[in-house]
Amino acid sequence: MAIKSLDELKKIRDNSLKKVNLRESGENGEEIIEMMVGMATCGIAAGARETLNAILDEIEAKGIKNIRVVQVGCMGYCHSEPTVQVNMPGHEPILYGNVSAKVAKDIIEKHILNGELLDENILIKTFNKA
Image (tube, rainbow, N blue to C red; front, side, top):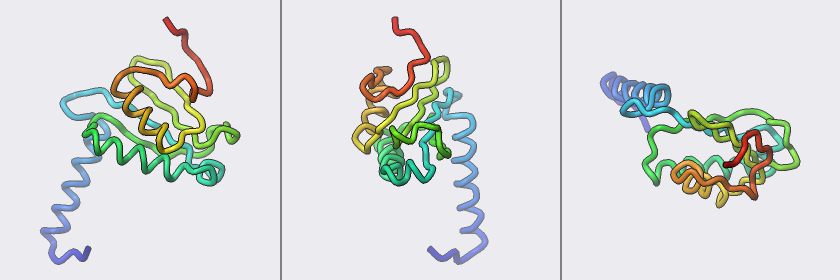
C-alpha cells in the first residue's frame, strides 16, 4: 500500500498507537492475558509459525481484546515444540507443548475463554488442582 499524503501517514500512526495502548492496558481496564510462543529455530522447525498464525487468527475471530501475543526465543523444551505459555492474571503460568494449530485454537477456546486446562498438552504443572 502506497502512502499518498501526510494525513494518511498520521492516520496509520494513530491507529498503530491505539493498538499499542490496548496491548499495554486492555480495553475497558481489563487485565491483559499474555501468550508467549516459542519462536526459536527449534520451534519454527516444528511448526511454530503455523501455531502463532492460528493463535492470532482465533483471537481476531473471537474478538478478544485483552490479550497480548509475544514471540519469544527457546523456552528449553525443544523436544515438545511448538511451545506456548499462557499467563493469566491471578493464575500460575501454564506451559503447553506440542501445540499444533488445532491445539492453539483449543487453548484460546477452552483455556482462555472457559478456564479449562488442556491436561494432555501441559508440560509443567506448577500449581495444585482443586
